[in-house]
Amino acid sequence: MTETAVQAAATAARNLGLTVTEPAVLYEGFSTVVHLKPSPVVARVPMHLPPELRESAPIAVRQQRELDVVAWLAGQGLPVTVPSPLVPMAPVEQDGLSMTFWEYVDVDRSTEPDYAAAVARVPELHALLAQYPGELPFMSPLRFVGHGLSVAKAVPGLLEQEDIDRARAEWKVLEPILTTKAGFEAAFPAVAVQPLHGDAPAWNLITTTNGAFWADFEDVTVGPREWDVAGWGPDLCRAYSDAAPVPLDPAVQQLMDLARVLQLLVCTPLVPQIPELADGIRMYAAQWREMPFAAGLG
Image (cartoon, rainbow, N blue to C red):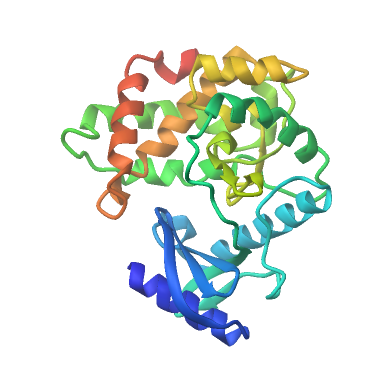
């Protein structure tokens, strides 16, 4: 799979006029990230996705949404990894794979991540995202949870049948709240929703030799701010609230923490392709089993 992504990225880049002689893999997970050496360009090629995102059209829509948001943020002066100016700002399909191209940044690997400091910077990101003028879907990272749970199978030692049964029952309660803006606002009328990073931005604040840059807006969406710190625990959520003009809502945070677990559980079938997922699933599942059913809503 890695070689397939590298070959497709290199071919697409050459077709766009870039020089590519030594493509190098920088990262592998849900996507394969390829530095198209010697060009200062990185290709991100989604390889391991839920069924709903495997068709090229939905992937391309999601990718264009990210490109548009990031270009706007960069235009507002936010330090963010940006689409490569050497190619058109649009997804490219090659060999059945849809990919995007980004400006290469030199990651500073001599420093350890400081997640408390990163979380404290998320309110600044949220304040700017709240001004984004484009249309975004509501809580799009959760749209495949229902299907994923409907076809989930037990994996002994990782995801037990009783876990699946509970998750399905919880989703039946939570789906009306988590999948439409109207449903969420009916349940939490005092909680504002806004454009979000969508995928744990504190994890995606990368340290480069030129400073810290926000990255990976693939899941950009509209939702409550609590979604962007879901699963980080009370100490880091407190760091966010201490830095934000309005603190997080504890009830919404509990709900978003649960939603993050359900999102992760449906990724269990991807463990053979992304083995490092297993530890995260075990950790979050263990915490989830101690949580009240449906975050107290059921």
